[in-house]
Image (cartoon, rainbow, N blue to C red; front, side, top):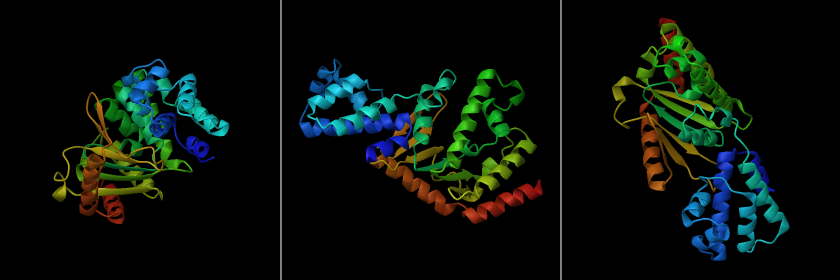
Length: 289
């Protein structure tokens, strides 16, 4: 029943990765070459590589054929994996917005929803999971919220829906460290910024949210850009670093890469104001405006 409970607690993106990892393990234990497995499902070696990495969806018929090839004959074990296949192909809530979301960001939304712990270091903006609607609209429209297009409004809906992750019964721990400059950058105008800081105070009181501010005096040394680290409870899902640029995003999951960014996060956490000091600092900013 562990696999079924695991599937219930994760989204389709994560389920696809878990399924691929489990099938790769079965193939290796059976001593079957990847090219041989690919031939059995009428595919190429590169296709099999993408399937086992969870980058593309599985067909139930292909999984059934692979299980037979790998010698998996137990009915219950086969059914668990076939059920996981079906669940991995279920549409995520964000898929209706696929026409306004970059394809590389859809993967992030799915992984974010399945993470057990999210750490983020932000230099320019309040992290998306903590943004108010007015602040987010200003960010998405490059400071012209009155010119928001229908597509901008749909992207805004996605951001607001993502924030529900923090209020779930099984919500991840969200640890955000933001540069002090973020609190003085008037995104959306002075009143929108004050409302945003008040929102940070509200959310930082949640038991699963940790918020720290990195003061001007020590900012700019640890990292050249913003990034997030996603950690998962499922052993098949590797911890990964997410870095977004204007036109694409990088997903880093090699252990050495994740450890390097983890050390950066540890450093800025030590340099930053403590969560209590951060709340005092935010309260002071609101009082002064």
